[in-house]
Length: 113
Length: 113
Image (cartoon, rainbow over all chains, first blue to last red; front, side):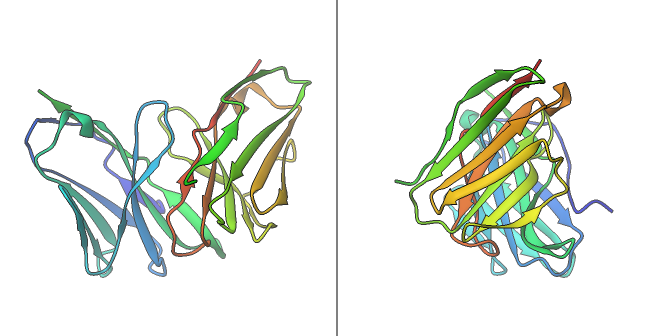
């Protein structure tokens, strides 16, 4: 099983749609979780940290399910500007190394007019 | 200042050249990282510096040599690279290595000819 897995998509949705991404991770000792957004030929930008209690930032909601070892990102009322690749990232004790942020392959979202 | 600055933005080098990538942050972050990203792939961790000491080397070939002159600067020295080393090289920093999201620089797009 790969360390961090995501559905690569693409997810093609109309403006205003609600879209959800999931990401699974293999290391049950992982402590911190993040969603990043990456536009074409740009660097990843931190979108949200993911907490056990879940967190919300405007149209974006992130959830963590430790029992099933997955994190999710929900985007409501999607905008054209939301089109990007969304990377989940998990920080845990991979290979005996803490401070090792592992990225999923990313899910590509395309929001159409 | 909430940025990570990388120079140069683009670099073309021959297989016999020696070059260096530079990264600078003034956010007081104590951890700095080098990642490598190939097209349509997630960022892959290369090196982690924590409090100016190398804490993780992800089995990177010796033709890549990191250096952390002080808490704000991180260099990556390149020598005798191969064409397959062509990629986007991303520098990142964070407050610590375990529970914090990373701030990425805009990257150096490296082409080895």
